[in-house]
Amino acid sequence: MGVLAEGLRELLWPTRCAGCDLPGSLLCDACREAIALVDPTTACERCGAPHGWLVCTECWNSEFPFTDAVSAGLLQAPLSRMVTLHKDSNERRLAEVLAELLAAPVLERGWKPDVVCGVPASKAAIARRGFDHGSALAGALARRLDRPHEQLLTRGRALDQRGLDREQRAVNASDSFQVAAQPLGRDILVVDDVLTTGATLSGAAACLLDAGASRVRTAVVARVW
Figure 1 (cartoon, one colour):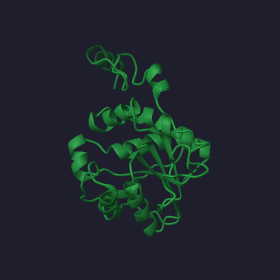
Figure 2 (figure 1 turned 180 degrees about the vertical axis):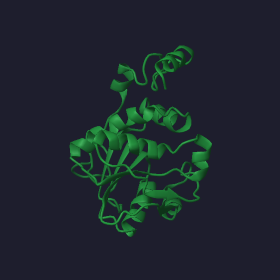
Figure 3 (figure 1 turned 60 degrees about the horizontal axis):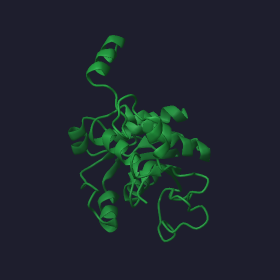
Figure 4 (figure 1 turned 90 degrees about the vertical axis):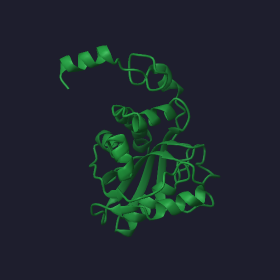
């Protein structure tokens, strides 16, 4: 977009904060400070839950195909609003802001994956939204980590995970992914915007491992807590 076009856009539709809707920037200083970030030094290394570094009550009786996980923050305002605006209101510029938040815990862990891969949206969701928000987020994160980005997965027909219980989510996600590019022998970081039960990320990780990936780790912008 040219300078004149960008200036006209700002005049007609000024940039507003994704947290509080005040004009000025995509994320104002007050809302940035208000985000409930997860401290990666005290979080569970296995599932990314906050304060789970010693004993994690979130995943102690769960099995995941991915080996490690990080979460940028908790799914509460203003981060929850940012996630929704990016995904459902076509505010694509927020991918860079969300990726900035997510890059911090990944870098803290020192991860250097062979490739960064987003959890793909279904064809119906892409048609409805006009873009694949998972791929956009993964691409933005890959740029910040200076790692390659590839969309290794596609997604078949599946129910919307919202409104499903833990068992239903697991069944719904288990067979909804297909490999789109060869993951053989690769260390893969799978990226998603929200973690609720881990079913979606588990389904994606299992698909990649079954196709020969050497390791799958996961990173999410926000997790339910």
